Length: 76
Image (tube, rainbow, N blue to C red; front, side):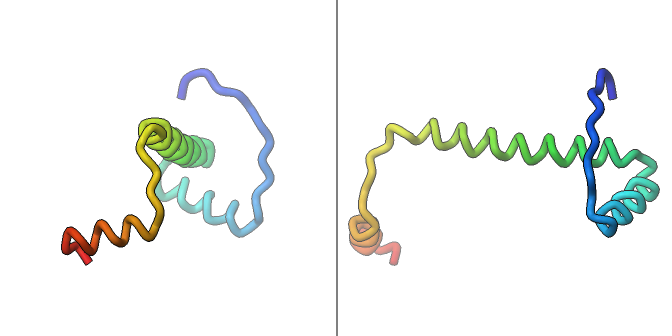
């Protein structure tokens, strides 16, 4: 896993039990499961922020205008 930092995290007892079972079944550690999960969550946030920044210059239209355009194009 490389260089690591230590932190104390308190889990609901049921979540901790499930994590222990999942780690045993996957022959891995709870730390590895949590690290992978957090990386996925942070990547999703990064992708959302990037998509927002990529689209910030797009023109803004009203919902009514969107509906009008979709009807005009025969999409609804």
